[in-house]
Length: 345
Image (cartoon, rainbow, N blue to C red; front, side):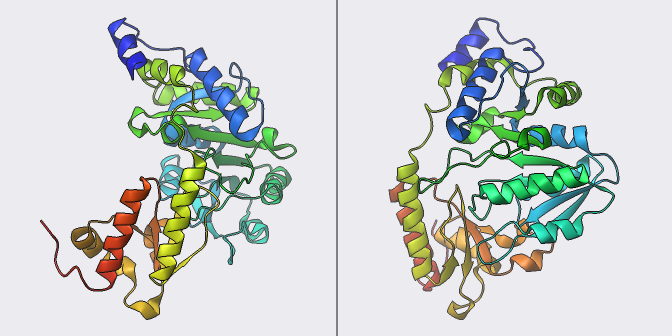
């Protein structure tokens, strides 16, 4: 924060280099090397954007056009279809395979047509918390190579991989660099979402295209905030994954006690489903959960193309401190037990 304020005070508030401040790109490249053990060239392969969603928009503008199709494994982060439609392309949802929310390569292959140009892969996955395996990612890259497609990966939760599992980037597999555009952001890693500092990582030729499009979208992320982010070092604000894993385990255990079906997430978020025998599906009472229990959960219907596919599911997160999380779970338990009849003011 002090570095961003100092940049403003010093008058360093004009346009930065189109690709982003070099010192910030160096910090991003170092961070990627820490989280994925893959070298990234900050000069030729990294472009700073206004958040990860601009990075996704720029990547799709560079690789798709009106009428093209983009495969999106679902459930998915709800903004993906809107970004795809913004560039004039058509989102095509492909369900993940149960149990385990696995990438279904056969299902993806069946959806490929002569109009398919790209696939969006999010790992660690929002909302299921799944971390896709090297084999799954490699199969997607092979499919892209077979049909001359591009894989756009959303890796914003690359630091939040639990149980000593490796983070598998799209660049972690053979030939991934040639077919994958990585998008990410520092906002989650540093817990400063309002700063809107994201990035694209791509091989040099594609990076040249991305930067030309980035120039015509936002021109650049706010210069003083880039100066601030460059001084932080992306591990400085990183929450201890051991602490987060403890909170995850608490959330999973308590939700199961309350009748939810929960898969223990390997990544940042958890998706949970209410046991229908325990009462009406909780996603139908989200408003009352918020008003009476003062606990915010997201309905699963927003993560599917067909809302009915999300019936019975809610998304919860475990980013707050353990005491706050425990209190929220207590209030949720009271609500489900009928103890919170009306909201407290």
